[in-house]
Image 1 (cartoon, rainbow, N blue to C red):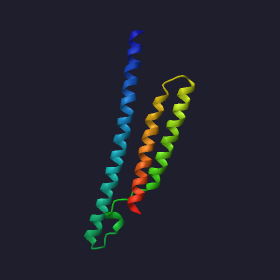
Image 2 (cartoon, one colour):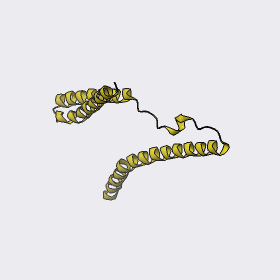
Image 3 (tube, rainbow, N blue to C red):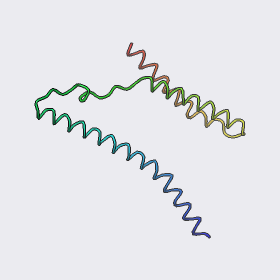
Amino acid sequence: METSVAVVAILGLLVSFGLPLALVALVLAYKHRKLRMSHETIARLAEKGLPVPPELVEPPSRRTSATLRGGLVLVALGIALAIFLKEVEGPWSIGLIPGLMGLALLLSWHIERRSAG
């Protein structure tokens, strides 16, 4: 009986730490593959003497609306989590973590908008 508890604990640790690492590795591999394909396309165009479209050379611009949306979602999540934990008599201040992260994103969005305009 004791070994099955240990196996479950070890599997739980491996899954809880291994899954995020696997997801990060997957995203990085995808980005590397995409960048390599872009470089190969530029090299082929250069070999043929064709002009390289500027979309292939310039990095994609970051949308500021994604920053605004992410900030609003995190603020709402923080408020909802704080209210929920207050109702179940838990540590409501945990809701401050996503809430303040959302406020930081909103501040970043505001600063980017002011500097661009």
